[in-house]
Image (cartoon, rainbow, N blue to C red; front, top):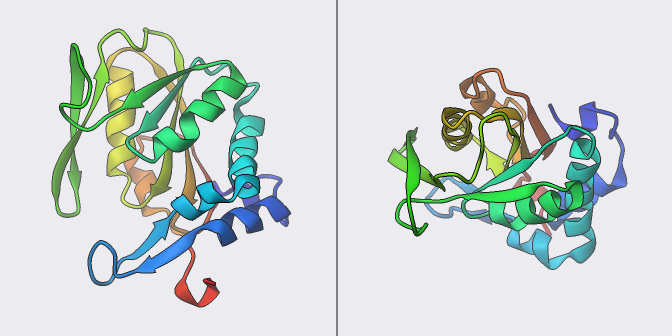
Length: 191
């Protein structure tokens, strides 16, 4: 569900967030309109709006774990976790975490990848939120959900800053709710 469909229709914060995201055409390959959130991070007001909207949504959901997907989920997840009184758990690419890990492989449009999490970072019965910057196909979020559920966590929802209007990826989330702040920007709306 988009934030604008959940009580935030017309909220100027959503417009500010959307406008702070830079569109980089043909990156990393021809035909891709890359949604660059680094410009959102440079705009402290838009960045704060982003975190505040997520915090307002999750504050009273008894979430004990915010799991951030590498790497852009790391930019929003810790702030949300601190504000709602949860721990932050990084879900990393292979061989980035020291110590014992569990892994979940997943399919990409162009191959396969894997997410890893420290063994013992999440306990059975904990309520988890998965945070990432963007959902497209849903493969990465699906792997994050599987990883958390394998250790007995209850995944409450996935939250993304940007999502496609048709949200094709949601069908890969095994019925888990998805909360999205804004739609991808196009070049004609870009500065």
